[in-house]
Length: 262
Image 1 (tube, rainbow, N blue to C red):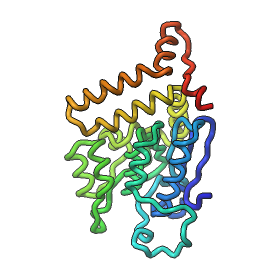
Image 2 (image 1 turned 180 degrees about the vertical axis):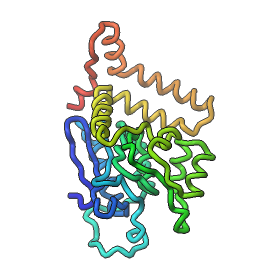
Image 3 (image 1 turned 45 degrees about the horizontal axis):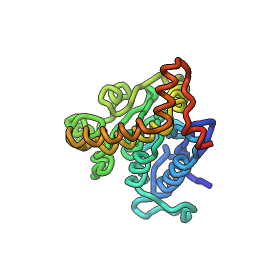
């Protein structure tokens, strides 16, 4: 079905892999279209509780496929409708399931955008990160909106104005990624985190993620008023009642929303 990505569902984990390693996984309209389709599958598939996004080969992604965006690609028309970075960034935010970027190698330009668009990101200590668009007379327009929501203003501007690469340790310290681990431990670290998240209530995580993103740009009082209503919504769910009862009875919870989905 896909020509530029791989999609697999292993237990509760949907894994999406950028799969053009010979070119360091460039991201063009076709790749974005396939990503949008795969994210849609992940969202609608009840068995998928967590989404992991990674890259094949030595790089996560070198960024946008400039030839494709300029209309100079000789590739055949894609089988799946193309999409844009805006479509993918919004799809990840509206997924309703935790997303984890598994950064196996360099994440540059649009590739960095995919990383920061995910809810969490674990990177190999060997990975590097950059917004090098300024070096070719461009500016990281769409991804700048995501970067400034993850790092401070001055750090974000330094990245975008210089185009300099930073290490995984620096990326973790600045908030671009969750943490960096030795390359040999990356797969285990991501799988462990994904499996941990998959044990939580999918209903509550969906409601929590929705509330988080809906209020991230609100001022304090409107945010608190909105979250007060969202808390009432959560307290009215069967999963919340089960979670509280399981806590009082000192047993693992058995989420009703999982039973309904199956």
